[in-house]
Each structure stands twice: as C-alpha cells, then as structure tokens.
Image (cartoon, rainbow, N blue to C red; front, side, top):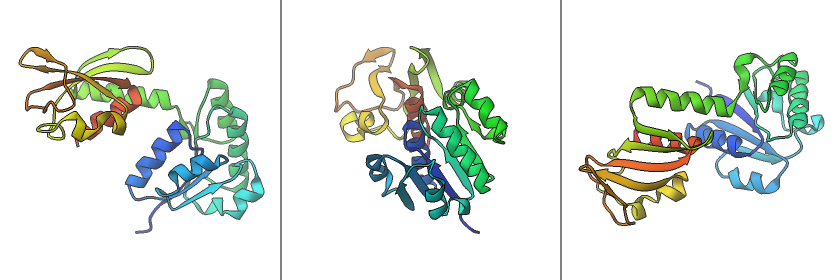
Length: 221
C-alpha cells in the first residue's frame, strides 16, 4: 500500500502539533515556511522541509506541491497570506486542501475558493469537541475552565505514572502542564519532585486545553 503524502504550510503552534502527530504516524511529510528557524526546528522530524514563501507560485511548482495527496494551509494570523496560498493551490490543481481558519470572513472567502466545509479547520472548536468527548467518556474526573484556553483538571493516575515521580517523568517539559497536587485517601498532597505516584491517586493539573488533551491521551495509552 502506497504511503499517503502530506504538505504542511506554516509552522506555528497548530502546524507544529500537526507535524508532530503526522511524524509519529510515519507519514511522508513536506513542510513549508518562510522562517528558516522554524524549518530547522522540524527538519529532522519530516521527509522534507523547505524555506520559501507559499505565495510564490513558481517556488511551489518547483518543489512539486501538486504531487502531494493532501496540503494543509496552517499559516498564522495573516489571513491574506492564507487566502492567496489557497487560491494558488487551487489554481495549480491541488484537490485535497485543508485550511486553518481565523474568522468567519476567512471561512466565507475560502468557501468561495472551493474549500469544502469539512476541510476548514477551526483549532479552538476542534479542541473543544475533543475535550467534550473526554469529559463524557469519564477519563476526566473534574474539570474547571479558567478561561477559554486554560483549564484545571483532575484524572485518575494510570500505569504511565504509578511507581514513578515528577523528576523521572519530566511532565512539565514534555507536555507543558503543571501537576499541582494529588488527592490520596481523601487527603491533598503537594508532590515533591521525588514523590512516587500510587495506584489510586487522583492527579490535579493545570494547562492549556490543547496540552491537557495531549497529556490525557498519553496517560491513557
């Protein structure tokens, strides 16, 4: 079976997370960004990483953008750049184009360019849906929204944690969430770097919804 190929344009927070996930799935990935430092950051993870302006039609032709099965326009807050990049991709004949959406106006313009509703990516909405599924599934024991992007959550300790400590796991550096306390036998414990997690511990942590979702998924693997 031929491996599916992907091109990701833009290495912001969303683009980087997408690239990481695709890389873990051993996908064939081309990454494009006009910032050389961002290209260097992902170069070792992907098949090919190129520093160029995605609105340069000749440059896109030269790297063979039309040979990729799926192209994701994951550029940041520059809506004009996203729209022009999408227009060029469509003009070149790229059929499977997904675009990160910044606003309702952005969405309407992309729709007029022929990007289907199911190919418009609203990162905040998608994160909310994933978090809702986790809440319903019961993985999360308690949940408190601190603001639209950050939450305080508690989950049952899993085999990923049991018998290990924070110094060993390096949770904060790996997932950017902070474990602030444990509930053990109805007592609250503030863990030190060497406090071992036990079988029935309830882990209380805080972070962005995006990072909480990733950490929770890792806990339950």
